[in-house]
Amino acid sequence: MNINDPKLFQRIKLVDALTDILYSNVPPVSRPKRDVITEDIPKKVYSFDEIEQLVQTNSWRMISLATKMSITQLASDETALILQLGLYKSAYKEVSQLETAYKTQNFALYHEDNEHTGDQDAWLADWPFELCLLRASLPNYSNKDLDTSINRFCELIQFNKNKKFWLPATSVEPEILASLCKTRSVQLLVNLVGLLLLEKSYTLAIDLIQEEIAESKDDVILLSFFGRCGYISKAYSAFKSVCELDNQSELDTMNWAYYYVSVGDWKQAKLFFGEALKFHSNDLNYTLANNEAICEFYLGNIPGMLQSLEKIMQEMPSAAGTDESLVYNYCSAVELACSGSWQKSLKVQKIIDVGQWAGDGFNTKVFKFATDS
View 1: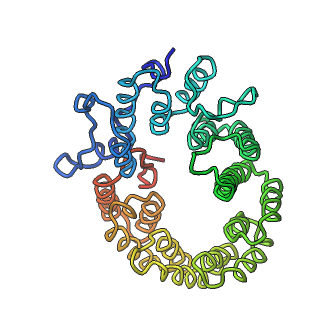
View 2: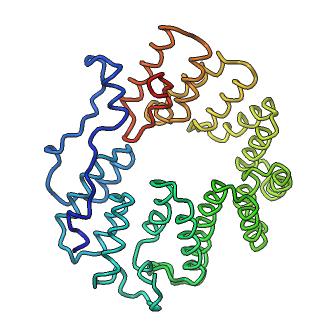
View 3: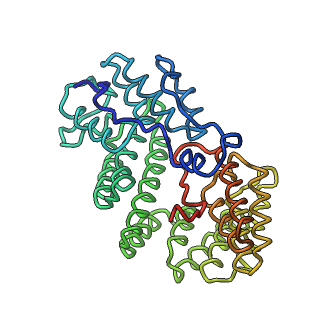
């Protein structure tokens, strides 16, 4: 089987949940168009710029169709290009099938200058680093299989320590190589710790971060991440260290905002989220604005929360207006502020607003319709 064999691909679902809820609750005249017509997809090899544009709009159905079309149109020996396209067209079963095909077939190496040790998983060194991350993450994303994802990230961490990953020619200089390996090390650690926290292996997660901090005592990113992992008793000292190293920066301000959230001091939390927003005077950070609005909720100001969220989503309809957390908080505020037909009409209008801008995979449960429960 070639790695561009059509049999490697799963059937592409062309209708998503947001389309379904629009058809169920919005009359045709007011319904945004979201249909994907397979006959309209040109038969060609799409450029990465074209695919990246689809990524920016979360057009996952179109990405699946476009990359499948591209991969199957390529010659089977164009291994490097096919693997790069695989970053965009990959579900759990497809990555597993690609892995099996890659290990059992004698394909040309993705990177011919790689040194192979003969280890069982040395083939991973031929995959792009991002595809290795995807392979490690997918078991948890698709099957809630934490153990497999944890084991794969541990494997990648060891790969990185032993410098087995392929490195671009621009990274051969010792300083650049060390920087890249360090960046990858932190990225892999953060992913692993996140999985351990989901598994409730809190002590192990904290121990791993502390080991990394011991080697990088002045790394404010690691210290902040450590402080935000949920151990309130350890958070204060971690944030204090960041404050001494990076006083009054956005990172420092955000740390204290989250700290006051963790101890339930919503007045101080709102104050620090507001201070953090000042670092974005030219580009509104809607995540911070959302957090500030949530503080309004806990301070008992529901109308203020509703007004703030509506303002954010109107100003940034394609970003804040399609953020699931903001939409959920908005619908929660609607339920608290009004009832009956008024409540339903506001939610239906929000479905229409989201449908005009949202990409695929939007979680319709955030609208909090009775039919979604």
